[in-house]
Amino acid sequence: MLTTFIALAVTALLIEVARRLAPAIGLIDSPDERKAHEGEIPLVGGIAIFAGLVLVLASRGMLAEHSAFFVSAGLLVVIGMWDDVFGVSPHPRVIIQGLAVLIMAAAGGVYIDDVGTLIPAVGTLSLGWLAIPFTVFAGVGLINAFNMSDGVDGLCGTLTLIALVGLGIAAGLAGRESELLLILALSGGVIGFLAYNVRLPRRPQAKVFLGDAGSYLLGLAVLYLAVRLSQGPESAIEPVTALWFCAVPLLDTIGMILRRLRRGRSPFSPDREHIHHVFLLADFSVTTTWLGLAAVSSAAMLFGLVGVIAGIPDSIMFASFLVIGVLYYGMIVRVWKVLRFFSRSINRRKMAKHDRRSGIDRCQRDVPLHVVGIAEDRRSGLDRRQRNLDRRNGSAEDLSNIVSLPRDRKEHRPKEQAARVS
Image (cartoon, rainbow, N blue to C red; front, side, top):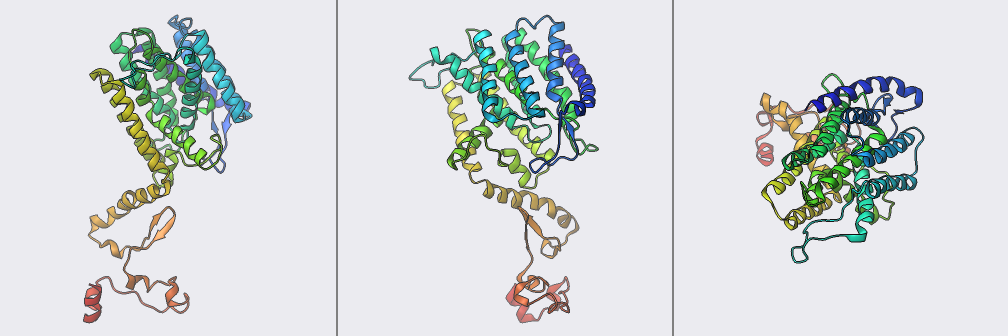
């Protein structure tokens, strides 16, 4: 565990240095129509994590063993930095990501050949000559899945850390010391970054962002570790287990691609319909969104670990993942109905807490509820007809002299009217 603490300290120190140099080289993120933060935030988290990881593993003499990973990661960090400063169009970016995964697979021998026994009647599926092309395809998808999850403070780093916890436990149980040390060092770097990236009571927004360099690095790292631990005769996990360790970013990305293709749009076109955007548009705070998705990801990771320890067949684990995927897609294509449900059933309860404590009838509350930005009056029809802006009662000037009903309406209404209302 000393490796983790050293990596944490080194990463934190590098972030302190890098965030002061970031404005000079243009590694800053400015707010725009798709970014709600205030001020310019340094995009140096990924650079610090990578540099800290290299320093820590070099001190342990482990760079040579994972040389293919560090070459691929270095390439992604460079293109990510360039993208952060100058911008890179989607197609060249995907090509370079594929090249990085190809280096890892072809030069390092880390590729997906055995996908497990997904169909019992067929047996273990071996990809043969398709192994490296399939690894490149899956690797590019996973890298972009983690990149797309970097839309809320703390989210991408937390999802990566949860995946690393699952991989680390599996590696420890299987006695895979080399992979375990890499996981511990990377986890320390991610924790050191999260100390600057999550929101705290006296810190309303992150001090540092990952940047594309960081999200590419974390996606590649999870891919590299998952493939190494799931392939070969001494594998620590089954290939399908890796899906559960990365469930939230994978399901969100697959759902997003299918949704855009269904609308005739490019999969690379930006929008605000990722799962974290759904939570934010439903009036959840950034912290609540971060913690909620982290809880879902943790539950999926624990289910994957249970499958490893209990020896649940691959076919059942894969079928369960497909069922969850179908349910998620069915929810996300009805995103506005989900928003309305969240806003009605959850956020309304927050607004009603004060009324329940004080014993005041919620029907007498003067503050209107809001559902996706639209006010919804919950008071009685008689009260609404007393409002100045009610179109059925004329203009505001015509109603300026109308007096509101007293709170205890039952005592002041005529008996016939009170009976009819009740």
